Image 1 (spheres, rainbow over the protein chains, first blue to last red):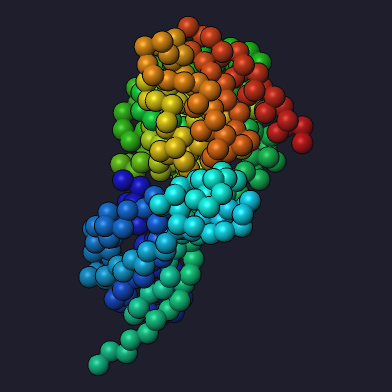
Image 2: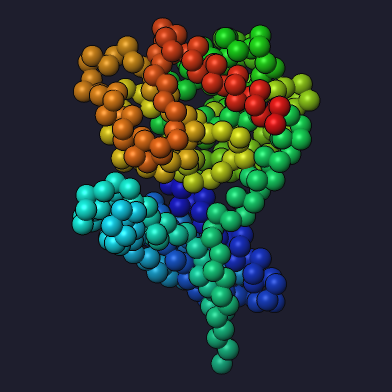
Length: 113
Length: 224
C-alpha cells in the first residue's frame, strides 16, 4: 500500500525534472528498486499506471523497474553474500556482525522523453 | 519522428522527504518542542498506552497529541475525553503513513508556543511509516504480545528506525508463545541501540518507566 505514497513522490520529482528540461511528454520512467527495499515492483507499476494517467505530462508513460540484488558484507570474515538467501547471518563464518551493502534502493534512475 | 532522449536522475525517492524532515527538526529545536513519533500495528494498544502516559505526564510537561488515521476521529475524541489533553486528528486521505510535509501541516494546528511535547500517533502499520521520516526527534513503537516475538525479524526496518520499543500487553504473556528475551535479542540484532520497555497499558504496569524515558528525552532536547 505504501507503493502509492512512493508513486506520488516519483510523480512530483519527474514533473520537476521535466519542467527544468522543457519536456512536454515523458514516455518512460526507469526505477532502480533494491531487492530488500520493501517496495513490490508490480504494485509500484500498478499504482504508477493509475497516478500517471491523471497527468498530461505522464499519460501512457511506462514504468520500467531494474531490480538491484541485495548484497550483505560480513564484518568478521569480510566476505560478501546474497542477503535474500542468508539474511543477517554470514554463511561463511556464521557471524551476525553483518550489514547491507546494497539492495535498499528506491531511486529514480532516469526518464525517457 | 520524435527525438528520444534519456535524462539521468539517479535520485532517491525519499530524498525530498528526508530534507523536509531535517528542516522540521531544526525548527522544532529552535522552538523547544519535542516531537515523538509513535508507531505500531493496528490494535497494539497505542491509544490506551497514550491515555495512561498522558495522565501521568500532563502535570510535568505541556503536551499535545496529533492522531493520524486514514479516516474517522475516534482516537482524538477518546484522548480528549480520557485525559483532557488537546488533541487533533489528521486524515491521511487513504495513505498508509505520514510524511514530513503532512506532519508540518498538522503542527500548524498545534499551539507550539504553549507546548513542550507533541506526540504523533502514526497510522497503524509496521511497514510504511518506517520509511518516511516525519521530522520527529525520536521514534518509538509498540509491539504487543499477541503479535508474536518474531516481528523484529519480519519488519526489520521498523525496528531499525526506532529508538524505543514498548512491549505491550505483558499481562497476557502466559497465554501466548511469546519469549521476552528472545524478542529483545531479535530487536538488538536489528538495532543494538534500541531501548526496550515491557508495559501493560491496561493495568498501567511499566508505564512509569516509559514516562521517565520521555521526560528525560524532552529535557535533554530542550537543554541541548
